[in-house]
Length: 314
Image (cartoon, rainbow, N blue to C red; front, side, top):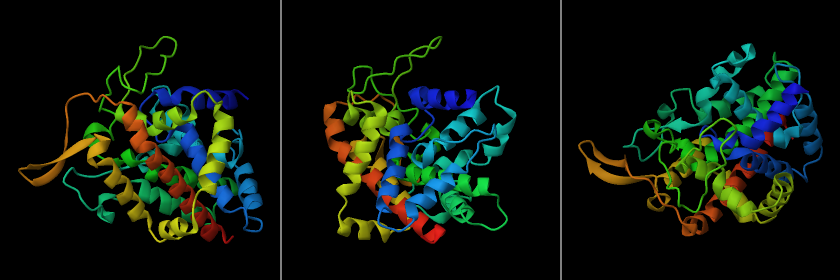
């Protein structure tokens, strides 16, 4: 029970920090959309629920279903990064770099070589195979389910396909008087400034949510997003491959209005250069990008459903 409480606390406060993608609401929304996409596939939801129910973390605790379990990889990563990390944390260290993909600032088109077999593309391939790979335990198959759901969320978060030098926008600070207010500091900690990565992780979604309780919001949000997807959109999104998904995110992240970087000529040609000043993001920023965030969640959910259907033979 102690671990379950700690996981719940993590989901409540961890995203005041700067280490993760989408935040709990975003990752859960992606995985809920995927399940809704499979509603008319006989036995699909039951198969996914049964597989998620098999998972036990290194302390023997279950996750609270597939959708919430899609957040477990970030909880595990948090343990890996702790100075006083538990002994079992080393099991997940191999996945640390799989939450994102870093490229050079001169990059226009992302290539497989950018991954170096250690990025989110690797995670998607690895855990897609892990869903049914012979020789793995039931627990490993179940773990692959949760991690695959998580990777599909990560690759669709634009600032997870970005640059190492500013840690995907974690070093790009937002002014205190911006539209996105700071989280209250945890006991014993100082107030932390908002950064551009955290805006895309959860602040944009948080502004959509307003005062609605998180669990209630996510269930309804996923239903609304999934029901709004057209057959034409679904077909177009499913025609793309994981490398294309990464390119989509990168194109968004490096677009002018996101205010992450600016394309300029330098000694090596054109590059999306870092801008030193803090960003003041107004309500207009929210109005411009909330539909983009919704679409990225929809695309991730549709593509996750297709990955699961193919890998599990649904």
